[in-house]
Length: 132
Image 1 (cartoon, rainbow, N blue to C red):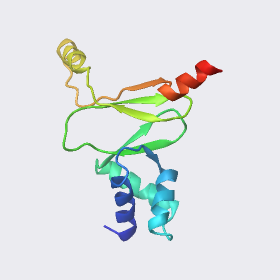
Image 2 (cartoon, rainbow, N blue to C red):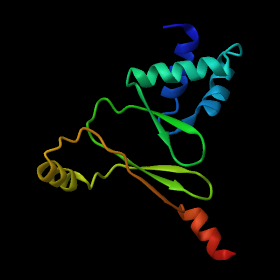
Image 3 (tube, one colour):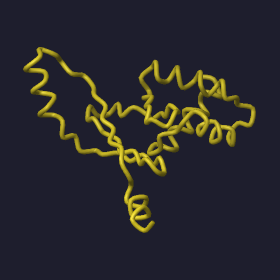
């Protein structure tokens, strides 16, 4: 692994709870290696996605965001996306297991993955909207 790719991966590992865009990751990585370029970030993200080390998400804000794969677990998690501040929260409860089983049984289809995103307002933004 090249030193610059190592910087990108290290930056992701140091921010496991964030869903970083390439541009946000670039700012973090540039602090560690001032010579790193945005094109290197994109190429590295593409490679890490291809190797299934990370997942790319689109939360409707016009930018792809990335998070490390949870390789140690087959558990799916879901995302709550605030429409005001763009905060992304993870929901660990997987309440779709029964639905998946029903879909598999009724359609003869083996599900290996799913993604669910809920859009709304975080507690802070929701309270601020009520004050206006």
